[in-house]
Length: 301
Image (tube, rainbow, N blue to C red; front, side, top):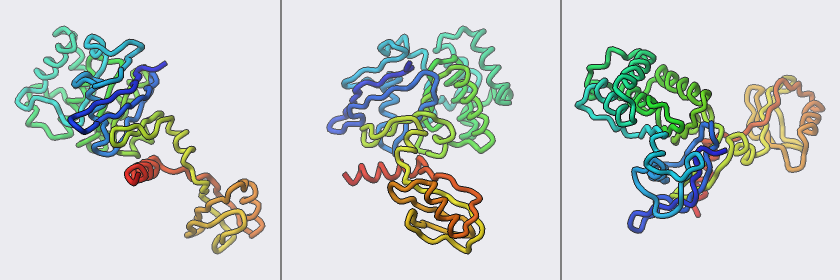
């Protein structure tokens, strides 16, 4: 079952198509990566999903129902650019935003106190937003995004401005909420974060979808038959009939197996040379490598 279904969505500004007939599904209960380079159309698409703007054509289904203003209350959105009122105090701003999400004052106060204590920032209640660092503001914006307990959370570059300690703090909360059943869309261009956090992804470029699938399946789709080897017994590995050596340094080699050759054959060839294999594992491409390759190929086209 899908928490969100994007069906043929298009958005055009004058002669520029920011989103061009994009379709994909976000599985319910997933952490889903919405990826693309700067200017790809990610933010335009998010603004359509959150009804900040409307699509020129296409439809959006949330939990099996066409998206409407009443349904959008089940979505929490954390934009990349902070949307906080700089002159307002932290506490009164969170109270205001919570009541916009239809929490009564008592419930809002309890929820906000809970989150501020969890993040060890209870003393910030009377601080103005402009007095806080970027990282501190990011934590407040995260609370504003999740405090009404939405079923779908959209996070656009959520770790911007955070130090490693606070990055892990927010990351832990993302995993906790997801484990409790919350679906999360994670929009970023940081591929190493995607590999760590997301199970499913869609990649868009120039307003069009160019890749979609589970991270594990995508990496297998683009593998290059390369294997990493740690060994002893030889001063170096040389290319053979079954493989080519890409690199070899300090008894650590990267080889490419030739087409239609089995790994057993490669291992046998190496052993016959006197190689003592300590480690032999397939080297899958990183999402960053796949991302760069696809974007460069698409731009060349």
